[in-house]
Amino acid sequence: MSERNRGTTTVLVDLGDISNRNRWNPGYFEEHFMEVERRLTELRAAPLGTFIPDQHPDGSKGITYGQVGARELDPEGEVRYLQVVNIRDTGIDFAIKPDRVADASHNDPPRSRVCKGDMLFTNNAFRETNTLLGRCVVVVGDYGTLNISQHIDRVRFLGINPFYVCAFLKSRFGQRRSRRAMARAVRACLRRFSVPRAPKLSSGKGAVLPVFS
Image (cartoon, rainbow, N blue to C red):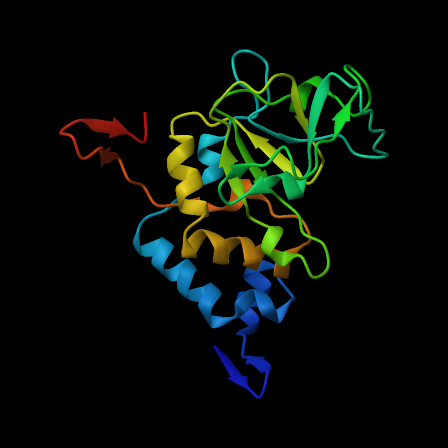
């Protein structure tokens, strides 16, 4: 239970919850976060890890992130290099930070190359930039050779529509789940997020679009 008074929040936490969840930050237990957890339980939500294989048949990872370490940008590089600021609510903004890196360089690991149909998720935020955490887009076109920074997850799902997942992560429930991750650790672990099971969505034209395959 949490109470807000004069700009401060008081959170009352059961010691059993702390022990069972191994979470010692009281912010993790704020009421609006607990409400989301209860509602997702009612909806029989499934962990996203269920739909993210360790490895796909083509050898690609189900989820990975970009290179770790020094960024050596190359204005003449063949590879477009996406960072958190490029991921917007409306899609990928290449113009806001049009960085590039050299092909096959340390900043261009093959495992994190981006393809059409991938979902990109910002897994991190910096001080005073919490609104950047939890942004997601589905790559809808072929944008040439493309790679990402370590603060973006590249996800390839199996058995679920990436557009459905992205729509949920943009919802109130999904955004609160992302904010809650900041009370747990700096990095948001997407596999632990849950998504409601919705077997079918109507297109509005009589056809049925599969969400789970």
